[in-house]
Image (cartoon, rainbow, N blue to C red; front, side, top):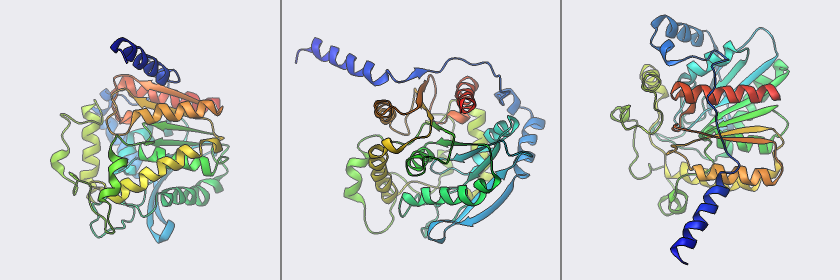
Length: 345
């Protein structure tokens, strides 16, 4: 093929891959979301801490009798609720600022730590290992949390909010239980890993849990803002690190080959069952994404659109993976679009 023809083909492919994604427009802070200047004020951040501490906490037994930790922040009325499904290595303690903002906009907020991380039970002798027996267990735990804690409250509107690995869990949930939520939002969902992760993981996976090459136990030396691939906001990055330093039991290290393999199998399941989704959803892909595969976002939305699903997709410019703890402009853009979308449903 001639170079000019190849260039033209690549241009067509690039255009076609992005036609379903709009760029998020700069937003005024109409929902009065927390901004970086607020986080420099100790009085303000203490309000966030006090609010979080006053949330109801507890545990329940998830699939295979693993103890699952949760926090609930309940409004006086039963109008609307958001259930958060977080990412790998994360815990409820990382979401203090977001929960505070959502609650102040009238939502009850429910969140649990996924099995094997945060303050929930671990399944390996080395508690730092990122491991799961079956990816479906994440969805089973989420369903139990929904059925036993959220559903009995008879909320008028129920929304799902997910990030990263929580997006893979949440999208599977929508496919298996299409009538549970009025709408769902996905921040940097893990719908694929950067190649060649899924192609080579089978070669290394054994019978016993083992860290993937280059990974290991939680290492404080990696918690430097400089050169990080998560966020461009140093204050929010440091707050995340501090939250885990204050709660060392919630820390998690690197992923195992088993976790990667189970995740890769789940990607196939998710794409094969898009047709089962009935819930309207909105998806955000960071322009400078380095943690999950952004091409999987494009492919997923393309397939969902072909099937006539009620969905929107946005590219968040000048943003990294962690949209909920990003710079003010990108964070406000993302959360504002989420709350506007919820209002529509």
